[in-house]
Structure formats: structure tokens, C-alpha cells
Image (tube, rainbow, N blue to C red; front, side, top):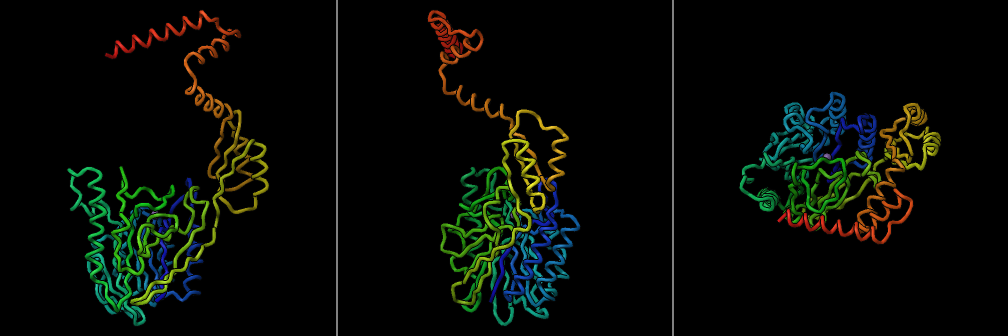
Length: 408
Ligand SMILES: [Mn+2]
């Protein structure tokens, strides 16, 4: 069986208020091309379909048309779990209509898919956290863990636990869940897991939003089910294999650069060739960069203007940093924006500010005597006499003694 793994679409997400829907629609087109080209049997989306629990209508429309086209009338099942950005209820609301279409939407770790014979596939068995699907005479058992928030796992999180205990028990609880659910795996089935989790040691970016406020409830890689042939993860936006485990566990990452911290690597998805009892073969497929984000650091306003002019035809999002001695005029900002579309931020970097920051750094390293001498020279244009230096230092010492006695 050939499975395609993608996640973190974040449909409806903006960049500093600028819509990314056009790029998201381009991604869907490329995705469907890949799916057709590569004869994919099943598609997995590991959460964060939307950017918010209440997505804009255009984002929902894009999602519905995408999954309808992917599933091809139910011939190619699509398994979707909710991420920390999705509303589980809202994401899974179309379920009664979706099964016939080959679309399986699971909102929470407790969600149970609807067993049934559908026109082109079967859901043979399902329960909290697992599903067995038959597609083209092959059977897949998938452990499914849509984003397990603290609230959704609150039975093990007690108020009296300290942070370390809480962390341990969260990870352990997920481990227990994997352990008990993996009893559904069999010799004659393809055994996989689909989860939206933050695995310890994973590389983060600026666009994920912490999975838990006030400290991440990270999961240790050692708790992943040993006998899973592939674990399709969602949450981290950089594609990566989970380190610290033998299990083939991957984050597909987001299909689009969602912050300027993501500009240094390519986006991708994974194609997994897997059959019962054999090691999975995993292929990384790189996606186009539909509209790159670039950060331009310019030494002057003139350089910034020139750069805008040179790149006026390129389809980009631009963060502009300009070194300057003064505040930029509205007319100058307007001119920059006229020359180059889609400048998402103009950041003036004041030369004085740089200098001041440098000076503050220097001050920390100097003795009080040296600082006094420099100040004196600055004020009077002559160096202080030795007597004056001694007097200053003795006054300073006296002050320190006084401070010390007052504190006691
Ligand atoms: Mn995400």
C-alpha cells in the first residue's frame, strides 16, 4: 500500500495580516498532482488542517474541495485527525456525510470512526484511538491520537503534581495509550500510528504555537509503539524524523513557510510504501515554494529602494530591515511599498541605537573609576586630578559601606 503523509496545512493562516489562501490553493493543486502521479492509495493528514477553531469560510471551502478531489469519490480514503489549532467538533462535524466519500475525520483521542462497508473501502473495526480499514484487499490498523490536550487527558493530570511529575505522567500516559492500542496490530495488517504531538527533541519554528501554555507537555520518543511500521506525526512545521527511537516516526511539517524562521529549508511530504510484516520504504517529496519569504537587511534607505526596484517582478513576501539615522517618512515608506508589493514589515534599525547598545555593553565591563574619568573628560575636556580621583573613589567606597550597613 502506498500512503501519503501530510499535515499542518493551517488553512486560513495569515502572514502579518496578509492572506496565504492563494498559496494554500496552489499547494492543493500540487498535492493532487503528486497523489495522481504516484498512485497513492490512502492519504493521512496529521492535524492542524485549519489555523483556528473558527476558520474563515474560504478556508473551509478550500478544505472540502481538496479532500473531495483527493478521495476521488471514496476510492482513495483520507484519514484526518485534529491538531491543537483545530476545533475537534467543527472539524469532524461533516462526518455523517463524509464516510461515503472515503473521508474519515477524527476530533479527539476518544473519537470512534463509524464501522461500515462503503462503496470502495471498508472500516472493519474501530474504537477509541484505533481504526482498521480495508483498501484494495489490504488491511491497515492505525492508532489515532488527535491532539490530546491536557484537558482531554485530565484524568491523569493532578493539581498536586509538580512540573516534572506532570511532564513525566503526560508522556507516560501517551506511552500507555500507545501500548494498549498497539495490541490491535496484527501480523496480517499494515500497522501505523497517526498523532498530533510534540515529541521531545524536535526542532521547532516560530509558527507552531506552543502545544501547551506554560511549558510544553512533550512526549518522549521512547514511548512510541515499537511495532508500528510508520508513525505519521503532526505539529512541528519543519519536516523531520523523530530522533531517539528506532521507530520510523516522521513530522511531514507544514506545506508552506509560515514564518520567517522557516526560510532556510524546503517543505515536503512523505510517501510511504508499506505492506504487512515488512519495513516501510519512505520517500521524501519536496514541494514548490509558492511564494518565498525573504528578509532583506539594507545598509541604507537608498539600498532598500534599489533592492525593491530590482525585485519588483518577483512574487515574494518581504521583511525589510533598513539602517537609518532618523525616522522613515511616510512618503518614503509609501515609495518602498509602491516599488515592491507585499512588504509585510519595514523595520528601521537606528544607527545610534546600535551604537548606544554597544556602549551599554561596554559600560558593564568598565570599573566605576574608569567610568568617572570618562564622564569627567566628557564634561570638562580635561582629565580629573589624582586627588579628585581619590576623593571620588573614597566617597564611592563610603557609599558602599553605608549601603551594606543599611541592608543589614
Ligand atoms: Mn501546526
